[in-house]
Image 1 (cartoon, chains in turn brown, purple):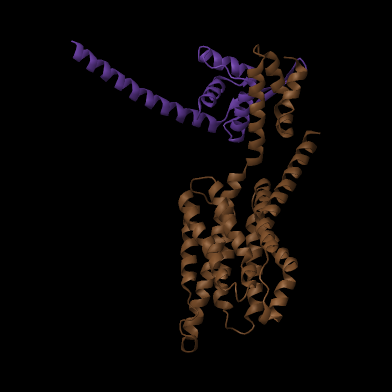
Image 2 (cartoon, chains in turn blue, purple):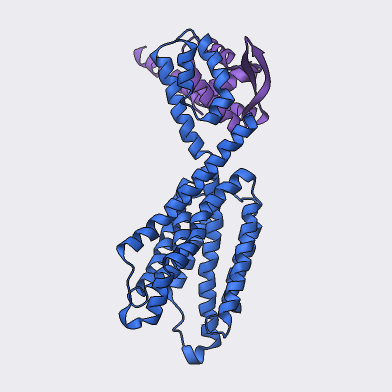
Length: 308
Length: 110
């Protein structure tokens, strides 16, 4: 086989792989006295494998961090809910009795507790079971009041997306025990979220503003954990976080009028229509793919500059 | 660890080698049974570099073409040693059972 033909075959490889090994491979191919279809097939198979590996590179490691950090935060959110309910019940038992205690809150704490323990130990099946139960809880609880107040599903949208991401991350994550860099920041963010349940319980006047300030502190702490990672892992974590971040503009700009209308017209509440459901379902996937493509393009451009 | 990976690490355990030298060494040590091809070799080399089991030793240009020599890292040495011990253990078990089997057959036919 001629050098030109081999060069054409090598063009099948991803650009960064070709830049790294193309010249060497060409030398080996030209020296190998076994030209022919088997050689061409081996090169083509290697090219396909390199493309897959390029797409997958580092993903299982990033997924592991997403699984652990996500499970920690979702466990904290579930615990905050429970702490808040217990706090109100204890403080105002004479007025409210046990009406604020929800069985589903206990179930979600248990589910995310299992998901977190499994994430730390690297037990994939148990992690998937815990995260599936947690995701089911995050969907079912707002779904119960969907008919009276459709916006409850929209308010819980970020939680549902987060839970789905933790479930998916757990399925593709590395196995084995792990303690990712920056985990202390996530523990701090989780602690802040749990404390929020006591500092800003539902019945306290002015608690709404305080709630958001505390959430903002938790978000900043969680962001610190991401920025503590090495560059490559950090960009992948940002891709995983992008669908959750995108829920804010999706709800704000896509459903703002819908929520305002329903608040002003309790007698003729609008339900979420099929197109809106499709947007809610597809937006996180589209954002993840978009962010990943941008990340890949950035890496390729960097590779190009480095090679130049 | 699959066989090509084991053989590549074994080839590099002796000395730093370039790609084609690895192919020839693997062929030599397996009596011609395994002769790696470029696609398979470089997929494995890329993966092993990514896992930190091998690294680039030096580069040279031969006939205006880059030739890169690879060598085993400390982690690669450990990994190869662990795999060698595992294979030896399995081979010892197999040998023991074959000896026992021959002894049984010997007893039966005697």
